[in-house]
Amino acid sequence: MNKRWMTTCGLMAWLLSGVPAVFAASAPPLSEVKVIKVQSASCGLEDITDGQTQTRCDHGGPGIKVYVLEIGYGQSQPQATLDGFEVNGTRSPVCAFDTGNLTECSPGRKTVGSLYTFDLAGKQEGTFSFSNTSINAPRNTLSTQLYIK
Image (tube, rainbow, N blue to C red; front, side, top):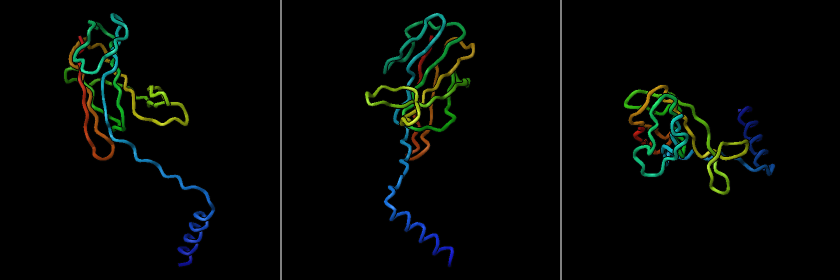
């Protein structure tokens, strides 16, 4: 009983101290996933536009990289494949600045999503697929795909 009273008094003192309470906002669910760029030695860096279903350039050859933008918070292990075979990638946080441009995060900036970089590791062409599920409600799953020629 004495311990409960001390905890209650401590909480009341903190509330009355005038220090504003800090509450963490919940992480936003996934709202968008899309391939934004494909890179290769033969074509350089190709921008992928909304609705584009295949690369314009013939990226054939080793060393192809695919960049996927994910807006919202997905699980840490998304599914990424080329013609059904898993491909490995890395993830970097992405932040939005006042201009609305997406960029890598620096301390104090709000993270709005992730940029994934997938190395196709010698695979040369095929259908790249990416999907991920939100870490919170509504636990929606979003996916995208692009044929890389």
